[in-house]
Image (cartoon, rainbow over all chains, first blue to last red):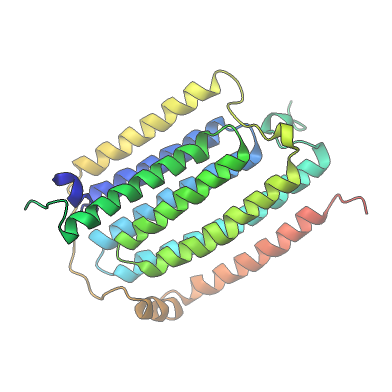
Length: 108
Length: 174
């Protein structure tokens, strides 16, 4: 059964990373609330990390490098989530809503 | 080389397929569900699957860090923000207008098909490994080759924490 040897091929991981990336882009483009967009951004970052780890496992000569890069991505994602959520809280305190369509103060 | 379902390798393959399904279903729920709370639960399920994928990629350390940071910190922070920032009847989420749904779907499908065709048509060459990528080597490299980035990341995290406190504190009435 070729399905059972999928875990040993680079393309499987690239496809699953592309799927997660696509879901993230779809969520970013269509979500109506700021928190929904933040969740979609986390999906994007997870897809990018899987790409790094897959190349790290299958092609790169130094298998520690991709893991270190993934750790850095995690740190950046945690900082991004903290800043983004505090902006959401401040936004809600000012406007009593978290919908992106209401963030139109600077609209011309 | 054929692998049967009931050999140890076959069971590992089955486990991987289950892992893929968990990841994809969690991702779909996270980017597509109507309520924000369900989206966060989908995100957690998806991250469990991603941690399993990291385990299959020979790095249980990164899998553990992924569960610790994303599920233990990021998902919990997002659910706190949902509880703080949105009244119950307004937690519904979905496409902004009738046009943004199809356009977003088409864009995402174009991106995914392009990336997948690229992954299948490129001839990937692998190189000989120079070490085994263990936690010990990661630690040594973090404190020698990548020590500058390591220090910068900690400063970025500190500034992000302070900035989050300042932004969330401003505008309070009391």
